[in-house]
Length: 249
Figure 1 (cartoon, rainbow, N blue to C red):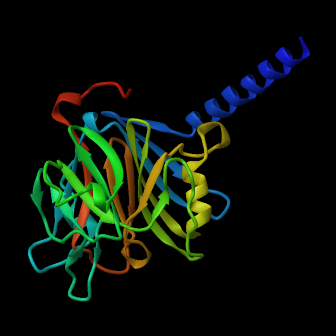
Figure 2 (cartoon, helix red, strand yellow):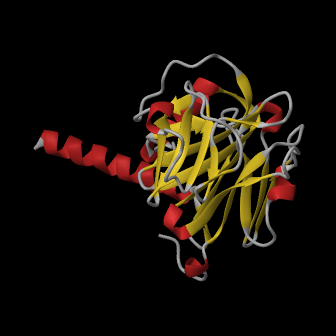
């Protein structure tokens, strides 16, 4: 009887913790939720959604040029973050594919990639990416911050960061506007909802530091963070026509 009471109490506390964490998310409509990040040295924004509810694209600047993320975001409801790393000539590094078409960069064997195939999001090593054939969307980055729910050993370094993660069937885009340590951020990403985390099973670091930026307009929300320099492309979320007016899942 006592063990049953203890188990019930633990379950109740876990459910209460999960409820509090879910309360931190605000439904913006059209399948997108938003969470303000604040406290414990972490500031910024997180957005989560099912890929089937939105249009998710890699939008490139004009050939041979770079641009601010705000300039790459379309009019109307949109969430845009920086995406690919880039070399000294401003060219995207790693695979970048939008709607099955290359938008710059070649596969880097040591990097992982965020990929959507058949509508399913995942973060996979380069060996599983091939040349990106069949991908609806793909962007490479490094390092992997969470791998199968576990935080790997990461280089100690504090910086502003842009992250994409897969949490169940949902995708989370996170922009840390404060300088945060990679391991500290990864632990927050991997932590379950009842512990206040994002429940990411896999997470990938995109370009950060001076590249980190956000341009978000969605319903009544407006959030913008301009980085120190222009970038070759952006990861852009817009409403899917079929979800207009639909309630979030």
